[in-house]
Image (cartoon, rainbow, N blue to C red):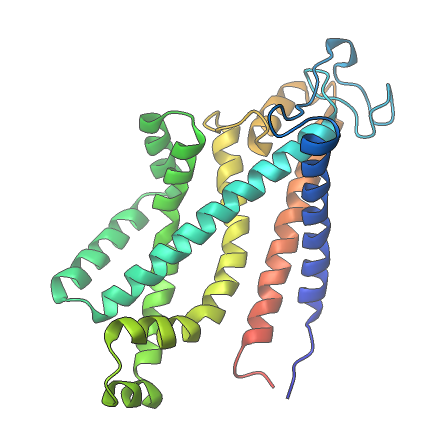
Amino acid sequence: MSKKLTKEMKWGGGILSLYILWAILWFGYRFLIKGTFARPYVPMLDMQSELALPFSKGFVLGADLLGRSLLEVLSAGLTYSLTISLIVTIVTASIGILMGYLAVKGPSWLKLGFDLLINLIFIFPSILIAIMIMAVTGQSMQGLIFALIITGWTGYAKIARGESKRVLALTYVEGARAIGIGELRLFFRIIIPAILPVMIVNMVLGISGVVISEASLGFLGLGASPYSWGAMLGAAKTVLLEAPHIAMILSLTMAGLIIGLNLLGDGLRDYLDPNEN
């Protein structure tokens, strides 16, 4: 019996679709309309328009501290945030699935090392670990991605380990082994398809976590781009009394993306739940 889309999926998918459409439009505007792939367009500085209010001086959402269009700066931050989040989520989920499976099927020393490593990472707040990594690697996109991967893969690994144990105990897996299917083929043909629905739900929810983590690092001055929403919020707080609209617009934009992702993730969890009819 086919399932109906949940309200959370509809609302979350609708909100997320608007953000994706926004990012696509900005991509075309930056690389095809106002610039080229060789010389992409960047928001222009105009100190005479500093802290302009919305719908004044030709700015729909107003201007930031440097006189740049707040809409353009938000658009650049959206594409940056989504790019970072997708890269980190895909890599961390892939590492987590592999490590979680090896923690079940690997030798005893690997299982012990897996538990020790996860506990060591969970002892310290992830933001502190990311700050330490960024302090060593420097403020670069590569360093930021590396820091977020190091602090993010453990959650996926714990989920993958539990799901792998569940799937390996199923009867049809034992039957597959009985007919001679090797471990590598078993992993790719049976284990991954079986645990993928659960991992997809957690990946969608994990993207919002990466958005928050990246913004937090940017707010602390450890971001890799001046268009990081966290970095822009950090600058906006210095002019909170003069231009409160900057912080409010930034906060609402970020909140909308996170709410959309969380709604979609919750909806997917209910939709993919095998116990639901």
